[in-house]
Length: 288
Image (cartoon, rainbow, N blue to C red; front, side, top):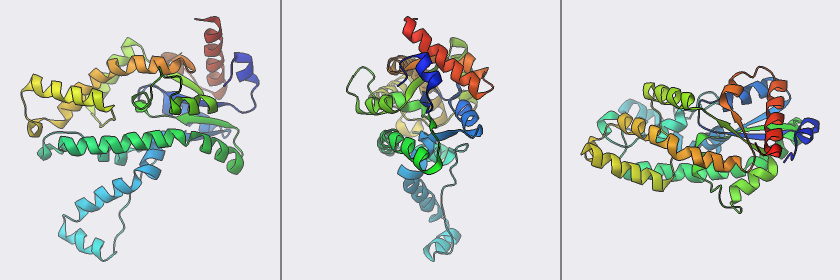
């Protein structure tokens, strides 16, 4: 898609997918484009939490409700309705379901259940990414939007192989959209870690990485699975994940372009964004 800056600038239908760590501007740009009234916003995490994991999330709520006698009777008599109120701006039901491993008294899941939910997310994320062409067509045919932005999850790099030219997900996405990496600096990395430390949240990681880090954490701390503080583990893993994900993002950017997070933060208009993408295409053409 868009082999030159001129082709991008002249395109009547601009289609782009944003990827990178959460907190670097994907949703900021997506909301800005959507607010202009000329862009369709497709959120991968929202699609995962509604279409592919919505029933799983709602069922987990119902299991908790069944533990409360007052709610149990109402639920069994169909007197109440329990559902996830997930939105573009509030993905908490999805992350809460994904959970954290460790001490059940601190809200942790046993590791086997944690892995089961991780696998559910992996399948859901791949399916949601492969739905992108469908939503490109749907956006135009139903709503008349030629311009399309896909706000991908930070874990896209965990479910694709950027070094495989036949990777089915990346082939699908690169034939449909321009892949754009929002790259953070060392300063961004420190800020992201500080922010995550204040509010650690569940994330998806590829099984090989996750199993290795779990074993490493148990060895370093000397704790059993049931003794692990869930928040402490995900904080520790997050810092490790930043280094793990960076080369993967870099590899995906070879399928498209990359822009700097500091430049994204300075965007104020759709034109600003379109020119930033054009500049990145010029840099790619020049081999910079």
